[in-house]
Image (tube, rainbow, N blue to C red; front, side, top):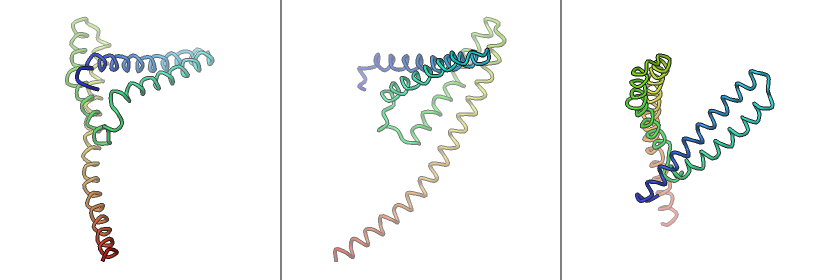
Length: 157
């Protein structure tokens, strides 16, 4: 997408949020229905939830085209998202909950801040490990390429 398409990007992000929320909401409703013995409604909610995920993936394909992604970029994006959650989003939500004296929400946001920090650290560790492995693999692949260059030189001689 081009920079002029900022409204379209915002719309795709809003659609992704809506589809994602619908998925989670329907899965939650399925859990409630199943706990109350209504298996048919639970299955209906689960089937629709699965469709909502596919809608969300369609939006993701446009927001994050596969040709722009690799494992390192995926990890970088995950780190950015988790860091935003624990540095900006949840602290802001927590502040509002405190002002409104919603102690249950404050506790929930505190838990989410801690989990988001943990997730960001986990993603950072995986990214660092991947970088080391890819560096080692690059050396191996360079040796392979040199081996084939030598073989090609012999064949051409």
